Length: 634
Image (cartoon, rainbow, N blue to C red; front, top):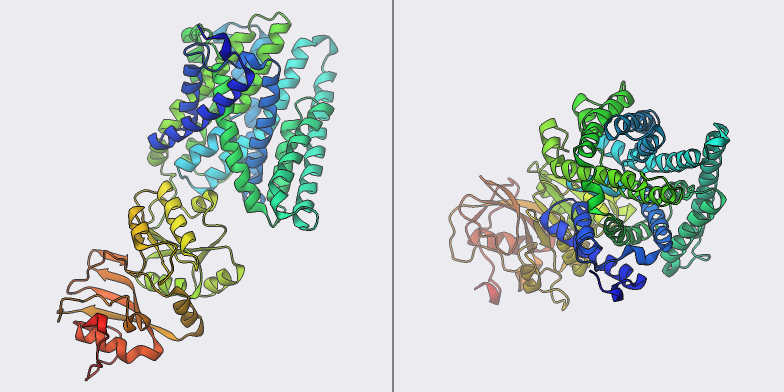
């Protein structure tokens, strides 16, 4: 039995926050869906086991905490949606949110009635509760299982929009069940008022945030995040006060407006909301799982499990088939969408609200209803989450990612490296936050990605799966190193390269090696000088082949006079092409692309020829005489 000292609301919230973050860290290391670990941790730490977390100590405040958290989570999810992508898949999304949701509600109702033996009123409430899928579960799953853009867009949009539709319909259905004497008019007026209020409040809030963030004189840069957060939380509660449970729609509407409103600080706000969402999501699942009683779930028996299987294997496929007919999605894409329909935090939160209100009205099935919803959440998340990658592979809907490199930085030196890679049929993607440099890169024929390369969302858009390497090649070596570290957290098998400044005291070669990365160009270089040369067209890219090494030192030194004359970029041999780094040891037959300074060509060519290199480029002459070597080269 838990100590009375643990029945402390502040302690419960604090432990839930800590447990939520630790559970998600463990899930990352185990490469399993976070919600699987969160639900398990919630049950373990709750009254059913260790009793360290006592959700009952929060009393009515639990619903307030859930409401505030859900508003932030849904705002962040809606903010990340691109309206342009939504338009391309508008038909499938609209029908999934309307026709698909209706089929799911009817199917859930019939399953609960036939298998659980509940009356029609409680069965219908269950049907409305399982209409939703939920971005809080689908989005993390899609980050682990990279599927085609069309499938990802449909699933993400469905999860967000159906949350708003399903939550409002569920609450209205509960009002009708508890006030049946008011008749069908309650349905029409309640739905109309909630959707109208939610859309109006959300759109107005989104507009205020957008205008405020566009005017630096109105909202200073250091207040953009708290300004946005305050307005979202306020809008959620104001909307709920005007029309109960309309706050969900208000948060989503505000997120869509801000996310597509060309806000200068959009990336910073989104990054802040992502971190906040991660924290709140963990806390919510811990609290709600701890508030659940295992005895109530196990009491459902085989009937409860069969109900869940009917929802997964019959109702969901029928809903998806009806909603995507004639959409242009392939049969395998439809099959994957039909398989992936896990329920998330909104279903759990509304189910807890139902249990409380039905219990107050003396409806005995209230707790069983919540238990069945939690069983749906647990089974769908565990089964579909763990099998998502396998099913995507079998159906062939995994995103095809070409092997190649992602370069952080589109400056002139980075473009020279990219040209050397692209000349050997290596796919190259340049990431930068400068419109000018990206425009130049596009003119030179490169794929580009605008964004902050240190943000996880940008890195995921760069499709890290299957990439051969990631290169940090900005003017800031600290940013280059941080980019490499962020990449390794997402794609551990990829090789990371960091460009370092010569004579800088910031990041050293040892620091890069200690973090598992590699030093681009083989050593520290005077990056500013080489970028300037590239911008002025004062360099040429030349290919040299190592035939028979004449001396032991066959790698151009990175110090002394020669460092200012040439820089090795890429090495090509029969096994493939790699970027030149500190571990590169050329052997006979290897071909290397060098960047040669125009003013130092004779010196560079002389050194290369003296050390067993022969030009592959026909216009590179072999010198007859060799100038004296620098002190470091003797």
